[in-house]
Image 1 (tube, helix red, strand yellow):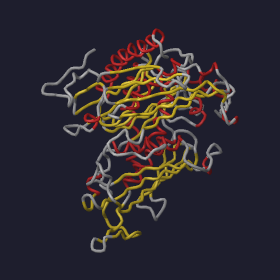
Image 2 (cartoon, rainbow over the protein chains, first blue to last red):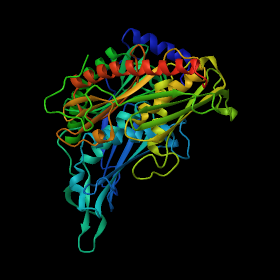
Image 3 (tube, chains in turn yellow, purple):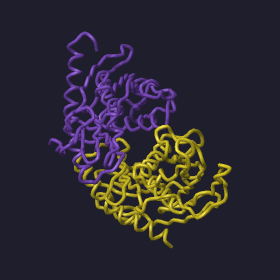
Image 4 (cartoon, rainbow over the protein chains, first blue to last red):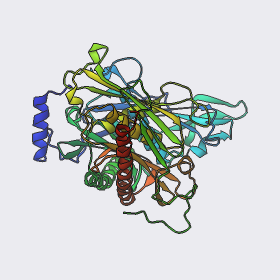
Length: 266
Length: 240
């Protein structure tokens, strides 16, 4: 833990009175900013800022062979890079468990909600399907990379266009786009992560708050449906606490998803 | 509480909705280890071995405040229908981490600064719920090794097949496609019902997920009794 104990104590003391250093309420997100089309070679891309946290997410596509257990569906591949440029905590080298877990949580948030209509990304059953890569880069890590990455993935997908495909030559015309969007469902899936600090639950922690967090639960949800969930870290959760965050997640999803959609509309 | 069963619903193997597959638990299966155990849900078989607490090497990984619990989950290449490549994958690394977190709340690692407790779990035969079987075996192996623990951890998967909740998901059930398909919700709990691990894949609403937690509570109580029995047997018997 890189946040000193003296700060940790103060965070806990404030929270016991329902307060946070930056004046937010326990279940309030930091200011959200989304910019799309940040990389013109990508099929879709987005830069998401949640307070001091920033991620860039890009969607790329190409054509490949389907997995044996999904012969008539496109392939979804999610990866994360926790770039050393984004924090002194991250180092170059093979992916850390932190980055693997982040990618897998976002993967399941997208996949289990069936947000991408992968069955429409089949070109020839058993032979040719679209691969859709969602690559998440941390640019400035200041807590809650998870939810920022989830918003970024959705924003990048919503703005992505399919590359043109030459059916006669059976090859992708990279760098040329038609009007066809990535086939998506109407709803907006999001990941909402709760952190437990000294018996209190907060969302969207700053880096300091995340350091003090004893346990976290990420809920992938939309329209009152919970489609993925993962608890991480080392403390327990009572069944009553579990029920409480399920109830909270619905309200938070409503606020956050309408914010995301409002920004993307403009 | 018992799960309500909607009419016409049938589990592929004919079990009752809140019935787990036959469970076997045995400690002391690996003589070299400081503690070891086998745990199975029907065809899903996990073997766990604990080595330590021992000095952490390399030294820079040592934690001066507490010991480190290091969990390695591994599927044997032949444990599934289509051979999987031996060695760690992204999936296995994530399960290792999740399982470590599932056990950390009960293991008194603060008593062992500078050390590591290695928990190695191998899946010999897989028919879904492998992470749950692994955690159950690991908790047993830790207790068998005499590592101080505040409580036991017991793990079970709750499934939602179309709209029906079931306990202890098998592979056939995991691949359920009718209606709303399958939702898989592995839970791990202490004997007093605190959640130490939960994951979810699928589609469910908050109300039914709360029911799932209650079913998991009942099932983990039963598993806890089986774990206790296995530990007692090891003290009475020759092995262990």
